[in-house]
Length: 394
Ligand SMILES: Cc1ncc(COP(=O)(O)O)c(C=O)c1O
Image (cartoon, rainbow, N blue to C red; front, side):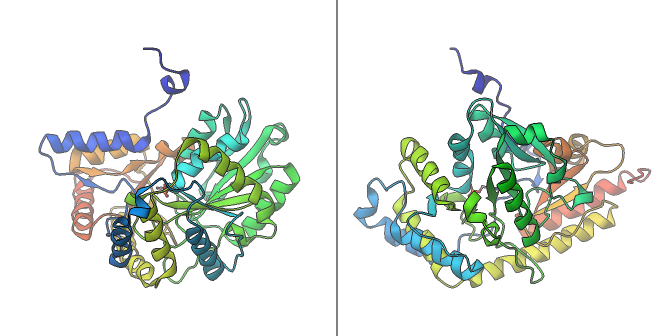
């Protein structure tokens, strides 16, 4: 069998490897606590599931859905953006439901990237921005996200020759994996920069509803002129604990949304309609569940930060998102440290280098772990620390 070079050169998706490692440990009877994957452990709220079950009983919803999604869903998304961000969207032209944001993020490269083209991709980052670019035959040019710049890309340092080749800029705030947030000034700067250099911007914002201490993340679509040059990907996965149902959306520039719709109409057959009705319920009913979930994540965030600090690991307290980005002890790489934690105390964390070269020196811990596991995992970190009494952390 002769595979394509695309498949032959494809590194395994980060979490496939981690899931495999956890399964191997469990098969040996070892008890593993995982802080690895950002998949909410809290169930989808019952009113959303009730609507899904009801819609699943209706034979109308047993047939092929339309690529562009139900008009009622597009309308619900537009109204949610108006209520939440005061952003006006044309539900027919500027909104497209997706089979989860990941799907749209991967496919939009096919709309803008021809073989040999360049996309500007943050590093570290959610791996799909560069995977999508490569599948389209393009090349990612990495923009380092470093602590000194608040994990925002320094657009002014991108060389001119790269800017002449680049067609698309990816950004993502609240950020995975660093936990950083961006304000409207930054988004306004991105819009100006994109206009100046003839770029399209794809902002990925699935964590905008997971926020703490009364902080409210902004939308890229609130920036002046954002709709002229860009789109925003969003998702119901993290806001409503709906990762398993696979539903998200892209909103913004009508030509960009239309291009993605044309690609998708050739590749998939839309989102199961019962799931679309569940999404309408999520977006249009009481939003109280979001605050309830955030209270849980905030408590966990504080527990994790306290424990990391008490074992001598440096980590900023994030204002939003599901992740803690912690520095590894001196003398370790991120893979060495993650391996040590797994081997010595059965705790799984994600090595930062898995998100790009600038993730080296960090590990990512997810807050999507039930309280009992969280407490067990944190006490194991203390055990790990006491086993290293001679270790100088910084
Ligand atoms: C930054 C980022 N974008 C997109 C996604 C994918 O979201 P969805 O579940 O809607 O595909 C994730 C999931 O972890 C993510 O971290």
